[in-house]
Amino acid sequence: MPKAQVGDISIYYEVKGSGYPLLMIMGLSFSLLDWEDVFIDELAKNYQVILFDNRDSGRTKSQSIDNYTTTDMANDAAGLLNALGIAQAHVFGVSMGGMIAQQFALKYATKLNKLILACTMAGGHCSDFIPDNQGNLLELLFPTSYLAISHNWEKAEVFFRKTSHYHSQEDGLTRQIQAHTTHDTCNLLQDIKASTLIITGDSDVVIPASNSIILNNRISGSQLKIIKQGGHGFIYSHTAEVAKLLTEFLA
Image (cartoon, rainbow, N blue to C red; front, side):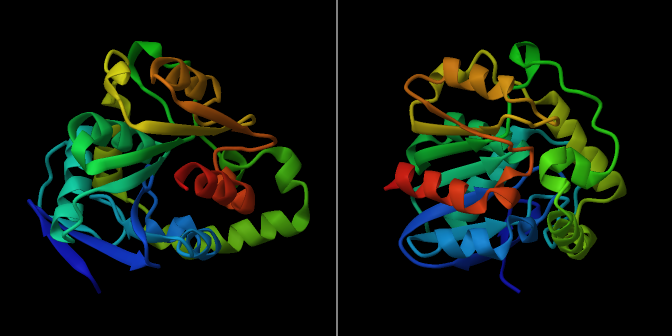
């Protein structure tokens, strides 16, 4: 299994396809398996897609039990690129991965070409109220209109049953939640200079679309795309549409 030592952690990663590097940063608790092969295979037709497990997720191992921040996690991502000998890449972050990607853009501007932020937020005082995200995972990720189709529910349930074994657990999950809840780039977003695409779902109940509008207003020159009938898991439910948006933006 490919791993790279970055500071105090051993990062598990996978590389698919060839072309210009595209670093994929996953969200809270989930592992690289949650990107799903169909989506990654589509991107790998044009890019060298770099997937990895964040600290305290999947097969990445850390000896540290200290709390950390989304900036620390951006340091992990930059360290992985260094370990792979990659000087610059496009960066795509989803949910908490989008928060990490913001920190990456702010701290490692010379390593970043284009930035994609999906279903994410700035945190701090400029983010809209986030509902109490309790309940069935599928109902949090997908709108009722999507789950009402029995095949969709069954397909998603089987998929997440397979990947949940690699999700963050216990103390590791607590540390990731702490990084998530303390994230705050409200007063820094104007310093992001990279060409930026922001994608959100109009039915996201985890991080409402209003948060992406805030990002769009504060990141100069950024583009905003809203997925109709898209929940927090729109990358899974609207795979072809999202892959097309990315390919057109990165071309």
